[in-house]
Image (cartoon, rainbow, N blue to C red; front, side, top):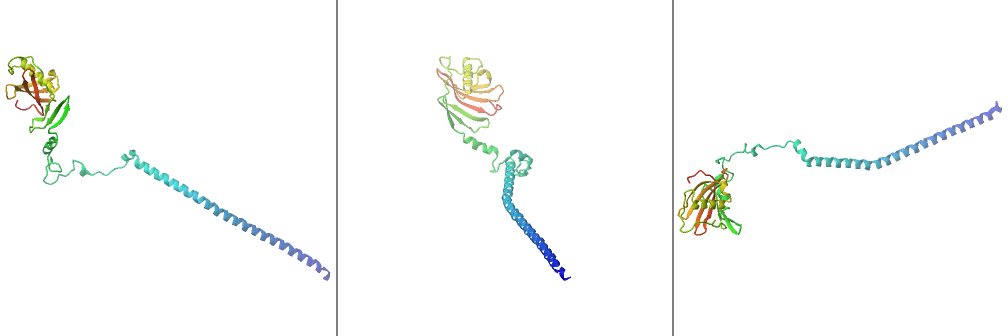
Length: 249
């Protein structure tokens, strides 16, 4: 028995050596795993840090695109019809409330349209413009029949074939009558054949006449005042633009 002790001792050493080798291998494997794990952790954190700015830039870009799209939709006139705007019924003439004590024909200043007209026309009183070397004056007389009165200093006598002592005639066929018609047409600027001569009458003296005429559709109506100039014929001195033909002439 004593002779076998060395064999057992060698076997024990071999077993311890084998165990140490295995243990060292395990330790080395653990160290390798630790290194690999640490590398993954470190690399992963670095990738996340690098990815974050990119994600932020993408988010910012997307937000800018959304903002641009919203601004485009707001500025696009075609979107106006898709949205219903609130309406204020009180702003419509049908729902406007009349101030207490004010008639429907009165404006907010308490004046009716008829009261305002003179103020507008007064600004036109004695308004003068140059026309063919003469002065044309427009005025508003205080007469509901007359829209405005025109005096043109460039009007001239139309000429005459009459000689001797002038006698104003209203017979509807004499030379004097025909020359009156010519002078009236001359002042209106409308040809004789396009006018209706409603009446030519005495203008208050033997050498003055008044003619009431209109276009054939009655859209233009005039009252022309004439004066006789010896040797030169009838001269228009004033023309009234009429609002109506419904008056005593």
